[in-house]
Image (tube, rainbow, N blue to C red; front, side, top):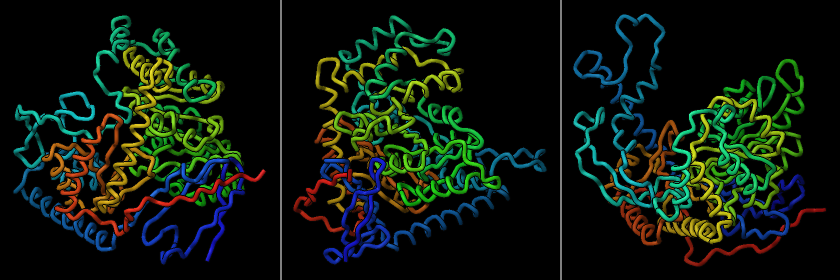
Length: 554
């Protein structure tokens, strides 16, 4: 049985692909093949399907979900028991509580949030906020700490855990470095301007370095103009309210970052959420918005803004940008693209998902990104046409009131971006981009061979390994640190309650020996903790690709 599906691409809805429903004994249902959800990106005009990798969201066996809920249930019951002991004075509570004379007031501390923190998070707090005492490069040093009161407080022992392989930092291209030859221009700029500006750019904080950086960013992205900000989080949260307000509609992906969510809420606009990377869900909301207008009055929306990320930081998935662009053109909406994790990390020359899909940057109305990941610095940018940027210079709170980016950070971004672009006369930047892509493919393929369930796109340097059960999350983090591997583990409420995970971030600075060591210990820990939940059979032969080029109808 064969089904013909229509893919949206570059404003047209006429790219046809044949999908076999029953193929090699595998049954496809609701986008899943034998429990594994796969999403194939459409190819751009004249581009082979080989260029775009599928996304994997394999479902765990049912018993895993049952045991996960059971684990949370047991911990919650123990939490209520300990709260009872605190209420009768048999156990001391170290967390914030309502003052006795304010018992009749409206509670300042939310009950369940406080319950979760004191009874669940505190038991495992040693797995987060670990203090490092070295450069956060491919390896770092940790300050050893212990707790004498079950993680309520910590004390440093004075010892250092050295040469821990860093698998958690967003150092995608390895520019978080202290090579004095590379950082000479940064040192010179520090001597010339100092380390702070002490003013906003609209007053006396606008330096020639800031203007040089903005011209460089615009040239790198292939847009008319760009504007930079000193904080990546504020780039989203403070600029979105300047772009939309009451009477506008924001269509937000359900897995968008907190900074996007906060900016949307501060704007006063109506917010509607579509399912992650689900074009049917997005188009349904767009069609409803255009046909029905605003609630009650049915007046047309002043603006409709679609907000997505290039690479989603918890899933490792890539936005289906060609289809989103087609939908936004079809329904006359605006597109806000957050490339915090994708700029510098994907695309043949590191220019993000627009380059990955060979799209015209002008198709994205608002391009946002940060310098905290691939560029080894801090801050963010908004890029697009000149009218957009000039408007934000006078209307964005982040532009009017925030202190300008400090000169050493500006120079670090400039030198990293010039290195990526090759304008400094060497090929180090492009070599790092290729090394990151190679490390990403190697690491992901080996994890799949071992039997771990991993999420995301094969091109994404963000690699989540699903751990599911709360007890295994804690045991995994401690076991990896004991093997001198630093990992980031994430659970509820940052993820769905049944999808706790460890998030690995690959870097061009990771050597093959480092990755092999990490994979060796992952294999051991995975066996010890029974973390290999994948039911997918991996063939020892390389995958076969369909070489057909899909062309757009003229």
